[in-house]
Image 1: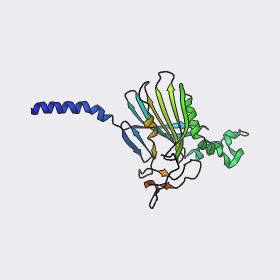
Image 2 (image 1 turned 60 degrees about the vertical axis):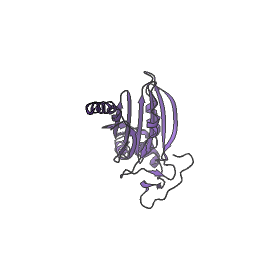
Image 3 (image 1 turned 180 degrees about the vertical axis):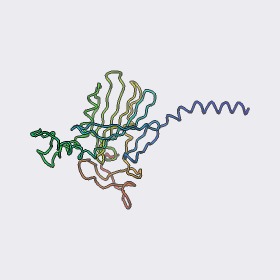
Image 4 (image 1 turned 90 degrees about the vertical axis):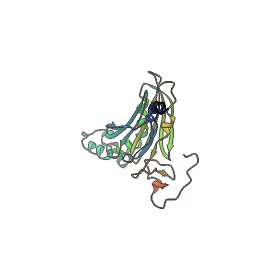
Amino acid sequence: MRMIAAVLTASILSSAAPALAQEWIDFVSREDGFRVNVPGQPKISETTYKSEYGADLPARVYSVERRAERYSMTVVDYRPIEKILTERAKKCPPFADERCTGFGAGAIVGAGYWRTDIRGALVWASWQFMQRNVKVTHYMWNFIDLVEGHQLQLTSNVDGSRTFVAIYMHDNRLYLLEGTVPAGAPEPGLFQQSLGFVDQEGNTIRYRDYYDNDYPPPPRTGRGAGPGAAPAVPPPGAR
């Protein structure tokens, strides 16, 4: 009986191992200031991202593959863009157009258009996804934890796979969340909605009003607000 029990136990554990290995986890990156649900520990790689006005920005990619499904979070650091485009503007040839120098409109656009580059980051990123060989089935403005962003749903013209995209800008960092599943598989809507923002201690950040990256942030509430923070009632419809 003990031998039979041991064999049964080993068989159960063996069959359960793949399922356990594919459990979704709440992954937190304090360094890049976000949290997200992913089906396993993500691989991390470094890359660069070209902004609308030509700045090569440092970026980090967190990716997980599960069979034919692909999930990724790309974090683009826009914080050095002022220095990058200001230095480039100094090298513009005489009588260069304003897109090179940015000085024609002064503080409005910034040298090399760095201010405009930040303000248009959400639109620029959304446009890049639309350039793929896909059909855009949904495009909307959205917010997560009161941080504004864009969301897209795409269907591949090649194999019918479905991609859900979430794009947000927080603290001059661009977050590109992308989940792709085969045709006919459950859509990655929960993955798209799982994004959250954290402080350096890993506490979830939540604001008392809508956060727009172009303006000073509103007060925070909850654990990420610091000592003495009082709870606040969010605007209607906020999650």
